[in-house]
Image 1 (cartoon, rainbow, N blue to C red):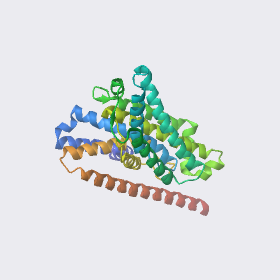
Image 2 (cartoon, one colour; image 1 turned 135 degrees about the horizontal axis):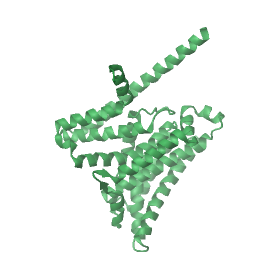
Image 3 (tube, rainbow, N blue to C red; image 1 turned 30 degrees about the vertical axis):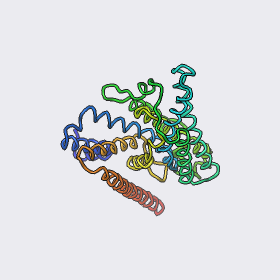
Image 4 (cartoon, helix red, strand yellow; image 1 turned 120 degrees about the vertical axis):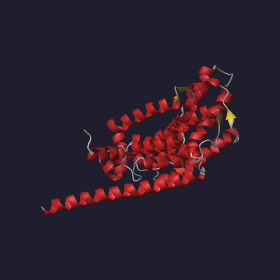
Length: 335
């Protein structure tokens, strides 16, 4: 039987689930059409597209870094697919053109991520500066390939493969779920995942423990870039065009979701599932503002307030834990 203390404990443990349920319930009460199949599909679609960027950002932040390039990286991915698809269209069968263009875009994104990781891990460039530079580089590349003009994809199968849905569940959400499960397995059960947490917790301690911190950082930034590229695939599939401005500002939402999900900006702490849940909450909040007929400008204010509040709460908790540990250590010394 669930007692009051157990209910409070469960609510604290699954606080993001509770928050999502409360916002959804309030939104449905205010406007019953909020629970329509069309709106649920839109929420899941938004969550999935942002989710790929948030997943990559989560791994970077856990490693003690930051990646400001994920939004423009996703935009560039859609542009490269459109550009390469138009160049190959009609030369070879579509079933060859499509995977080649997708692979080319993701490899290109991975290469940019590799350069970011290389500059951070081996040249000691601060992550903020390295990824800010990468953000401008990929933005310039995105504009250069298609001269800044949104360009449609000539292969219709691209949209049907990546922009379809099954009973109001978009394909992108299923792809995201699969990749998040694999990523969760990576960080929990595999050696590389433990290295990422170790580097974020204390790079010096990780290094003297025999962990190659530089290669770990390179791998994390490459993974983030590729995941952002995958997000760009779905953005392009649903919009129908390669657009260099498609994901402008998405990196800020990704960082907000990471922080709301309880991943410490100092690194070494947090769960990627919580970051995905926070992404879901942000997209519900977006739709709530729309269905409540409030000004769209309010969303930025609310997200900012939540972000600052989450940081204050998490900082308070960490200070409390440090104080508890220090008190326990002092008591051991006195005895």
